[in-house]
Image (cartoon, rainbow, N blue to C red; front, side, top):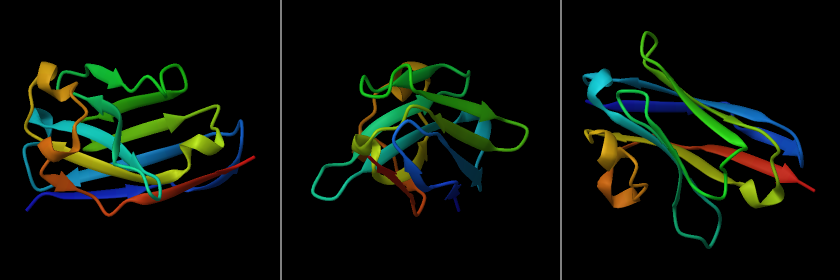
Length: 126
């Protein structure tokens, strides 16, 4: 049974930073693609960043240069460092995973991922 547990959300003022973590268990972690998605009220779920098994990363244009995704394979953990936050970053953030090789891992499309965490709320005030 694949399990993903997010943590690290909270409230911050614009310009601030937050660090989200996703701890994974129940599968061969190293072969999985891990992705962060977010969903604001009334909006579709949006892919934010992905980390492939080989460390290759992909970012949505809206977060490039501000967010950094990284994997710690020894701890089965993926983190999302979010800097220069704006109110537009306010959303529920979800960690998702599935078995996709490097190129496919860069396609940030929610229906392609079978395994999801419960989400962690990020609120950025102006």
